[in-house]
Length: 340
Image (cartoon, rainbow, N blue to C red; front, side, top):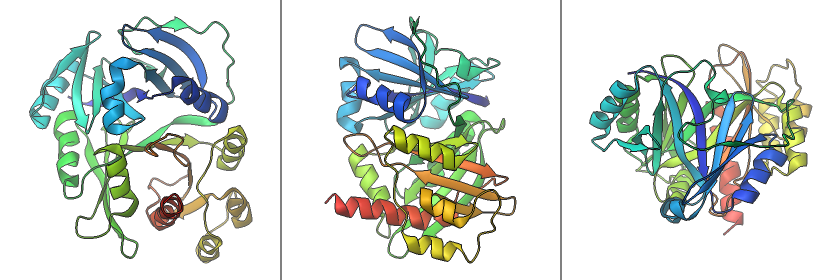
């Protein structure tokens, strides 16, 4: 009854062509295969140890109407599919169904989990049950910056954070890694980080404080029609180079006010990068007892401003940038206000 890894994440989108182009051209993924079904078509993308499926078609319009473009399925490899499925059905008090011969269980909002047997390299095995046709000319990005999926950030309703954390414990064998309450002055949020026993799967669960202005989290829940994947965090080895190349490819990153770097100068210990270099790239910096964490968030490239992406580099750090949440809130709030 334990999840081992993430095999893939599946993005449902209205415009598969532009979504694939963004992930390939701007973020360095490689298109490796295509699949056509009766009511949908999909493209399989890979980079490092990350596998993404991009799907569109009339069979997914219910999800798109309710949630907009976003992650609809996260495939888990687990040690025992039958036991994990049974545990998930009990914990979620919801149905387990079969799709393409695979066990599919509820997750959160409109997001499901497809349960798959363990394999040696899950991100190198195409999601089973579809007729994948390899891409004839692989315009590979073998030197892409992304190495793995560091964590999945999930936004849920205020007051239900513990309920979701318990679900991932009871259904999938996750444990609570950390928790935090952040009040940025008027806006406030709770967070719980849950992680699989294998340490290969990490979910950062976030929720607005029901008693205060939830700011960008309330806005996300409204745009997304409820809980959903707020962002995917991709681990890179050189964030300055990754940001430069992604920006040149068309990724629009959030901007960070100069005052942030003025405050950072009091606590930042230069190692691989200096403050001037971070400011030029707009990268945020944090530290914990183990080391430094560098991160930067994109703007959402999707029409309803739902899912966005994060680039993250760990110089020993095991945390999740809690002290950068204020900067993120400020940046997203500026975007929200400027958009009207």
